[in-house]
Length: 248
Image (cartoon, rainbow, N blue to C red; front, side, top):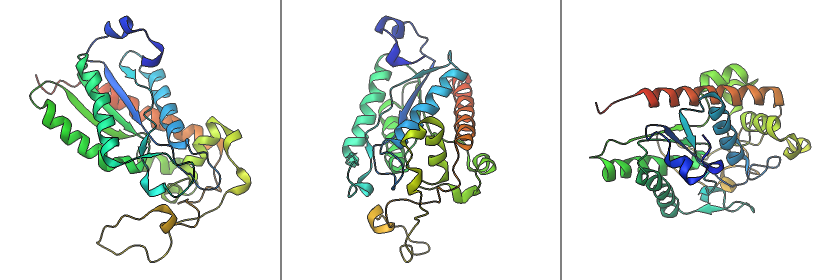
């Protein structure tokens, strides 16, 4: 089921154990060659393909495109929430669906910068709804790395920001939006990491022009395979969540 295409009475008639799929993404720079809506396009397309696979088990929400992208904010076109706003926005979306009685929420993330807030969100949801029979889950929009490595030319080196994975996916969806004359293997600058120590740097500090990973081997055929593998995996998670009865 696609929430945006349904009437309120149709939504109200749904079984409350259907899995509510909540795609969260971003609007941010993607190097020299990809559009700023890349993460949202990918998240929305994976969710659409999940619906094709398990239409009776899932209720797909509209993509929440406003993500946490402060590490990209120096690049024009990036639109970012601050941490507190992003966390509260996701909380309000979940609370709306829980308020209608839906019991199973799966957050599908397609932007790495959202990860820390999603972890805190799950903690807050446990605190808020811990005494109720409501299940909250999160997962990446893409399939596991081993599965994707079988498809990518560069294997694990094909991931990253605006690298082979994302570029191939956008080529599969909207090839007209990929500036194929501007593909460049940017990557992390040297000296930005200390083994065993965590740090947080903006992408204009970490890279030459905002990309991590080599996009040059990307193809639309690869992109279709990557999207299908991802949708297969998320759909399987939806099936398992729908069947799971952890509180009985």
